[in-house]
Image (tube, rainbow over all chains, first blue to last red; front, side):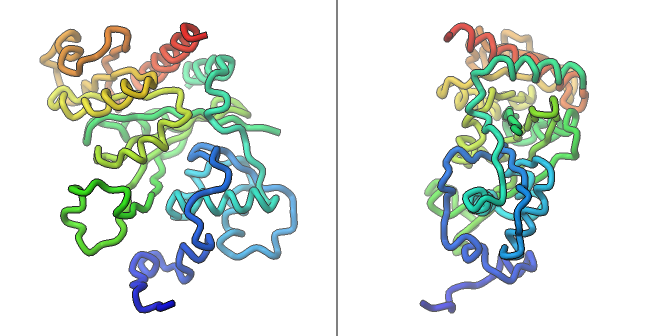
Length: 121
Length: 184
């Protein structure tokens, strides 16, 4: 394997030392395909000492419920990478997942709440 | 312990006021997140200017409205450039529906968005943004130009105005619910 071809441009600009593809072991999509940009996750009270710094940073962002999109925005990670990293953390029991949008889309009770919430704004 | 997220897509041509609308109702200043594109996700003709570059990024703006302790609404603006359709698929999947913003000076820029949601059967409302001044067209003329189905709601709005953006969102959610009831 040659490292000559890696120009490192994008990462050095962001001050990142570990290339993004290394962080996710070359995975490009989450195993849980229902993981959506709007899916909510929250940290579980478990020991995080064994986590890599980049993963630990995500867990720290998840002290309260937060969406995959927000994690990506705050940590300046591309969405595809964020999704895979969140998925890994869910798989390993560091994060819990909320109900993805699509599962309750037909639930008009939720939509009633949304209308009421918008009216209160 | 559970938390439900609800998604609404804010679409429209470049410069129609998508981020402005998101900002007018969002409880946080709109956030930007990026997706990396590989050449494979771009159309063959679209790599002009990025030759020799293996990746490019597409920015996505979004906002958040907390509805209740267990329901959060996210508003995702579509990328400014129409060619990133694969991002639209990601945004539209599982969404309640979409608001298609229309700039009356350039009606045609919103046509691809109308076409996109129509083809996929995703509920949407058109919001004619008056931000750009007096509108020279009647509702019928706009409907004609965008080939809108008569059942698709059309609202007049000012994307800078919170009340106006709220109305567009409420109209969309009601429209989506009415369609669910028809299907059921």
